[in-house]
Length: 573
Image (cartoon, rainbow, N blue to C red):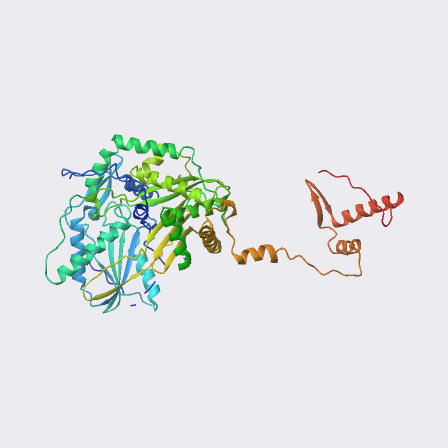
């Protein structure tokens, strides 16, 4: 429950971020390639409206969010967060009215979650009791920098949610001056996803403009609500079509590895804590053009090409040839769901078997087949798939896969309000939902590889080096698709010079007036009690080795060995 307008006491500004793993354009990217015509055959059917009822079930996605909230009810949720800088005269009351109108349209934004007979259910409020009130945050005393004020504002709007009361969407204003504000919008993932944020911002733009001139809402009535979708999905999950898709996944993921053993900088904690950071690695525009040309020439898409390269990178890092990488799909296969706010996103496990002697071109075809199969069977909820497969569970890592890949067009959201100049602010939320996620962002100036990583496992320097290795690998792919996977370059020129030249530069200046045994005796005097040699569980210190060498020398001399006399040595092979 929110207070009305909360004014705190002055003056904030801020690499890519929405608060969760960004929902990708993979589905659209895959469709841009050939052989994609039959990916949407299974659930193209109308969703009926549900009769009025007091409670509704939870979708599989919502069940997972609810379960995680029960584990950590006071923890900071990895919600969806969007921020904009606003310059101009902002009509706060108009903004509030527009937000109220959106909440009235979408049941999901006025939903709370209760437990009935041990099971979680959705309860949709009819009145305005759970409508979010725009929080106006003037400033904090002692804050002189906009960055610090933005950080505090972000913490304020992302404070823990109460799923039993709501509201689960929040709108906040950080007031810098009378004509400068920062707009913060946050949604709990149990009621939203990144596509939902786009819907929210689109409707906010439309409604603010209409209300500001005294007009009524131009938005058409929604055909269904998210709760209708959940009820329909519950019935569809009993259908034969689901069993066919489920059979595909059970075969595809049979005997799947439990954990991808990436070399980490720190031991894996017993419980996954989701602490994260991001590292950006721009890909040169010339290389981006080469990769697009490779994709066109091979009859595939940039998504498939980059995913294949990433799987090669993971295989080279781990030495494993059975690689599972996760990716996301929007999960909005019915036209009625396009403009709804709700958590439709689903996860897919892309499993590929690699062989080091295969060429990149061969692997590219295999990855395309795997990806097409996954998208054709994308309707099985990931959470349901985990229940069916029953992989060995651990609190220290996610099931089925711990690494994800996404390809996305520029993820910055847009918002247009009359009389205001708006610019998107990118915010990091300090979380990582997996061990490692590679998000490749398409922009006009080229690609940017964004590595989101778990800071409990990896140092920033390790991820930065991984970024250079990924670029080097892509350069090798663009140069020769027939190169065996084991031969594709990984090390940068600097690393190769360091390993081959610098680390192997073992030239040392020794005295030209001493023989080798005299130099060794000098070392004995310096480190007499240090271990000089060891074999198995046997060790000799320098003084012990020198003593045994002298004994052997005297023995050889007694047998007539002198200068220029050969002595045979018998050893194990």
